[in-house]
Amino acid sequence: MPPTAIVTGSDSGIGKATAVALAEAGYDVGITWHTDEPGAKGTAEEVAALGRRAEVRRLDLTDLEAAAGVIDDLAEALGGIDVLVNNAGTGITEPFLEMTLDSWSQVLDVDLTGPMLCAQRAARRMVAAGGGGRIVNVTSVHEHVPLEGSSAYCAAKGGLGLLTKVMALELAEHGILVNAVAPGEISTPMTGQHDADPQTEDRPGIPLGRPGHAREVAAAIVHLASPEAGYTTGASFVIDGGLLLMAAQRNR
Image 1 (cartoon, one colour):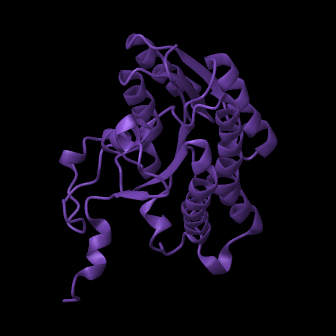
Image 2 (cartoon, rainbow, N blue to C red; image 1 turned 180 degrees about the vertical axis):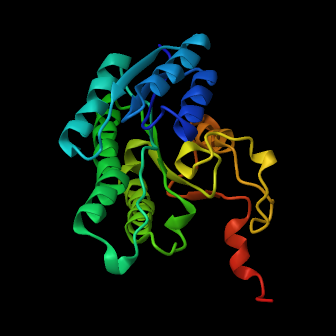
């Protein structure tokens, strides 16, 4: 039986690239979408074209209990779960002094509480199956550094980063490895670039001079799911073209 993976928010961007990359690596894949059903079906078609099975479900992380149930539904349909990639997320730009409770709650639900519940459901199944597993939480460079106007987003991603470490500690005895991937600017619809070719985008504020491609993040996630990453847990892998290094630059 082939290994199985569930990738949340895999209708576009990093999630889609990850689902396809995992299919290339031999996984059957559970695909979720929130508003872009055609995008999710397109991902499923790419997975199927690689000879792998795809199951598609809608996932609304603002409906927390129902969202957690989607993980169980997909795992049942796939015949198990070996890898969970918590990729679905959102962000709202509001100054701290103007932040509403509704905005704060929405971002925290989608970017922190929802991933926690999804990971919990997946981990329980991995423990019951007795074969270990992998959980990868997609955070952001803003797991590590602040971003003005994004208090809820930074709080959620920072919280998810530390949750990753707690999960890694508690789940190690069950052979479940938990890591985070923290992307910088990636050419995806979430950043308003609609999967543009990053080589055509000029970013003088980034040492590598360009945004990243979703495939570059997907490759790191597939590595963390692989046997070669069998001694890696509780880590946060920053994929940002050197953006965080700019804090070390002298003001001119």
